[in-house]
Image (tube, helix red, strand yellow):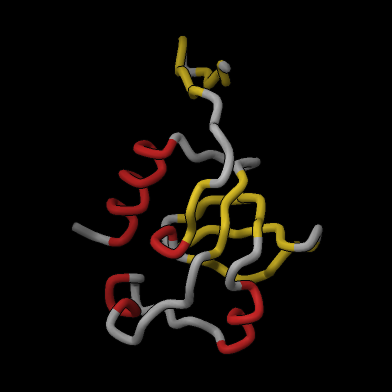
Length: 101
């Protein structure tokens, strides 16, 4: 299964969407780079470990976060993120997504 398929499964399982809060739990390991589509952990990303963030955008190769009220300009893999708040239920009706409590 490709990284994007695994990420999509994680998104559905955790009901993730832009605006959700997550915690950056760790860095990636060298052997995870292959499973992350060849992307590598940036050395300056280490300062974000343990921080809470808000998902701004979800791409097939990673997730863009807002950290400390700033756009991170980095992509983070789903497998180092942990949802931190109860998410609203996403429901699709007539090709439109709605958020329910």
